[in-house]
Structure formats: structure tokens, C-alpha cells
Image 1 (cartoon, rainbow, N blue to C red):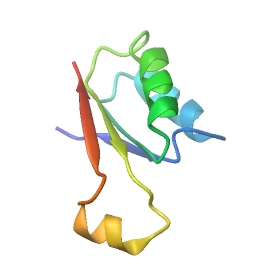
Image 2 (cartoon, helix red, strand yellow; image 1 turned 45 degrees about the horizontal axis):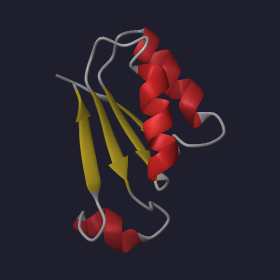
Image 3 (cartoon, rainbow, N blue to C red; image 1 turned 90 degrees about the horizontal axis):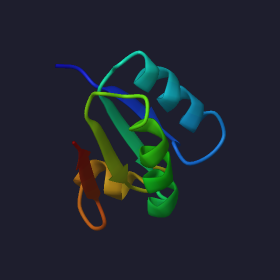
Image 4 (tube, one colour; image 1 turned 120 degrees about the vertical axis):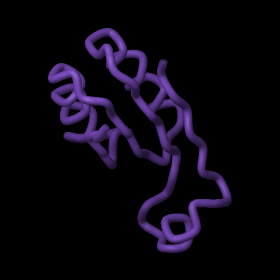
Length: 79
């Protein structure tokens, strides 16, 4: 199974891209550093998607968290 990976999901075009993939019924992985905003985006997207949505809270502008996937990586699954 494939997932649509959307980074920068908390602002700008990111939430709209996530919405497009959700409406097309694609499983999603949404990445943002802002947990509260991710949870709001999740709430909005579960209204239109029947597939799983994975949230990852991570700062992608620094190489260390991306390379190590540790120290603050949080994953939630829906459903």
C-alpha cells in the first residue's frame, strides 16, 4: 500500500494538498512541526477520507531529526 506524503501540512498550500489527496481516498502521511495544527487538519480530513491518516510532528529544516527519526518524533494513526 502506498501513502501520499505531504510536508508543511500546517500552513500555506500543505493543508489543501492533503485535502485533495484525502478526497481522492489516498492514505496520508502528514508532516508538520505544529502538533495542534496537525490535529485540526486531521479533524478536517477525516470528514472526507475513509483511509488511514498518519501524523508526524517533526522539524524538517534540520538534518538531525530527519536522519535519526528520534527526539520528538510523534506518530498518530487514524483509524
